[in-house]
Structures are given as structure tokens and as C-alpha cells.
Length: 205
Image (cartoon, rainbow, N blue to C red; front, side, top):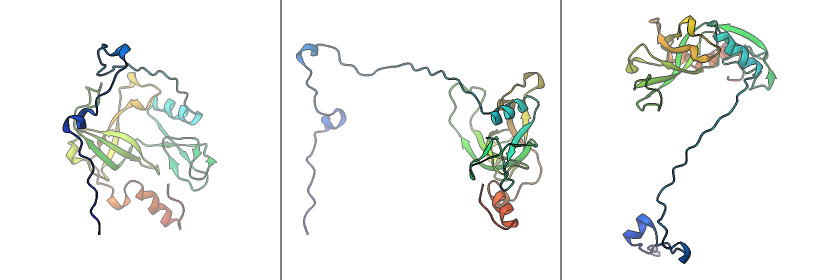
């Protein structure tokens, strides 16, 4: 059995800043750069797909659309125009209600820069609409963060009609309905697994 070699000890003053850097004589008297501040601005254009355009326009009239898969009937929201699991076109649009439940959630205690209207802590949740087989991200408010739970029934809180536009931002947040919770073993993506099991098996959404 041999001893493990001990690494060469580096002086403490070199551990923090590293060994001295030798500058060429031509710049030896130039003040060293300690930091660089580089403002960055990124502008881009986003053109939504045909399915996404229908989805966003529907929001202007307080409607939420989904796509139904022609393979197994799974309803996706937001609609993408395809069933990504099976690689097929999904062009059937489905009107969904603005109620659902919390499939999963996260309580955040750090503020978002530029969002002074969003006090901390706030709750981001995966909202599973009634009639949909996949969830999407939403903000839960109208109750204490500690009261949010998986399976909690929620409904959309919309902007005033005069402020509606072709944007998902029309839903300000999701608030509790006060109805009984969805059982945890039936909440979120578990609901699709149960549906498939009852139908005799199939792929998970």
C-alpha cells in the first residue's frame, strides 16, 4: 500500500488571484481592467403558428382552445397543430372551460426584476383545465401561498373586457373556486394515465 502524493502547496495570495501576469513593456503602464460592463439588447420578431394564432385570438373573447389528437383523443393546450407523441397533424380545435385544478406548483420567494406588481412569495402552478390532458403554467393568487396544494380547484381571473387582446396575458391569475379538491392520485398528469388505463392502455401524454 502506497501513500497518496500530496499536491504542491500554493501560497494563499496566489490561490485567490492566481500567479502574477507579466505584461509586455508596451502596455506595462496601462491601468489594468477590473471589469467590463456591456449593455445587451435583443430584438426579435415572433410569428406564431396557425394553431397558436387561433389560440391567441380566442383569448380576446375569453375562450381557451386546445387541440384534440386524432390518435387517442388527448387534448393539448396550448394547441400546437400536431400530436408530438405520434408525429401527426392535430387540427381539431376544442373549446375548453376556464376552470381546472393545480397539478403541481412552486412557491417563489425571490422577486422578478421589473414585476413590482407581483409581490413575493408568489405561486407558479401547472394548471390542468377541465377537459384537457396536459397542463400549462399559470400564476395562482387569491389565497395564501401556504394554502395552495395539488388538486386544488381553480378558475381564471380575466382582465376587464376593455383591456382584452390577442394574448394569454388576458388571464391575470388563477384563483381557488372553493370546490372540493381533485384527489391527488387523479391530479395533473395522473389523470391521463388513469384515463388510458380505463380505456385499456396506451401511451402517456
